[in-house]
Length: 81
Image (cartoon, rainbow, N blue to C red; front, side, top):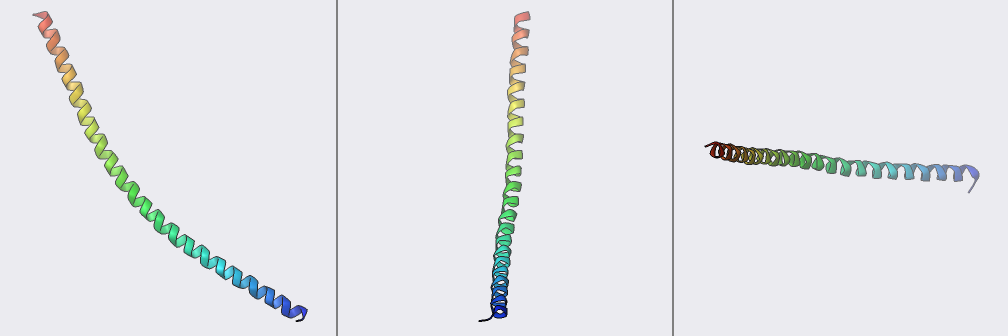
């Protein structure tokens, strides 16, 4: 095998390696894109659930605050009688 043939063979191996690498990168990008899309959906669902819980917590806090205020007003009113 002469120098030219060895060079061509090395170039061929390098091209094959580059093509395999590109294929692996492409496959990796597809998998990552799918996982990212799934993550975005999960995050949107988590945001919706969190907002619902916050709304329920806000209602509960207003109920507690209102009850405490009403009890305080009643206590003051009874004390003034």
